[in-house]
Length: 324
Image (cartoon, rainbow, N blue to C red; front, side, top):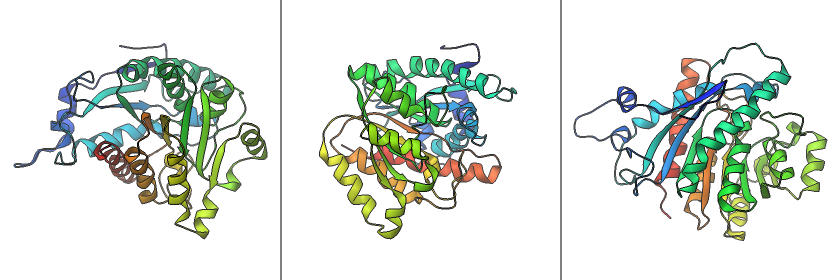
């Protein structure tokens, strides 16, 4: 199993998955219809949990992103397996754990550990992408976008196109790795050809970030414009997706959803239905997808866990139930 000094990947045993399921006579739940191996011909998607929050903490964000996967998994496994889901189309690959999640570390130490995590995430997802499967990554901070982009670029053999629904552009300086600079690292290290970020909050990105986006031709839209015209989001997204046929790396930061327990909670933002439209529109388009990344949900109480778990389950169901 891939491992590093402070992080480890482990598969989720079948027995553990079964224990999270709730059986009901006459019904088949998704947990009972999973692919036993991601290499199976029928399997298209591989679910990976990342249980860490050092990325957000290294960026002065809130803890809790380590809990997103555990909130999601039982909710997802107990969805119905019916005519909208291809049998055996999804495999639970496993989870990456922070082996010392409560360690007291200064900012420099946190950022150094993220570099170690980058390498483990890259090694974990690369063979899945090389096999033509689509990893769906749940939990952890947005720092994990960087190794996912790097893996996609290696598979494509060229810089990739990235689309992100996010109040923050995450284009902070290359000051050591954290959740706020995955895309600036990706652009400056040559892994990203084109970066597009939708629903930015004008007040939550500093001027240096706006200058960086100007200098690197980052395509962006602003949430305030969607407040004035709620139909504009659909038109903006539709136009961007239709403009090219190149594969996409798909990012959806859970911070973008209004009242979502997350690393950067906000009372103002997109509603869950708009996030669902974003994923469904991309998956229904002709553009291939390298991966889907749903980071930054940070539930720290049972009630927050219920909100996060069900929201993530809806989003993943939207991905796997759309036919191209």
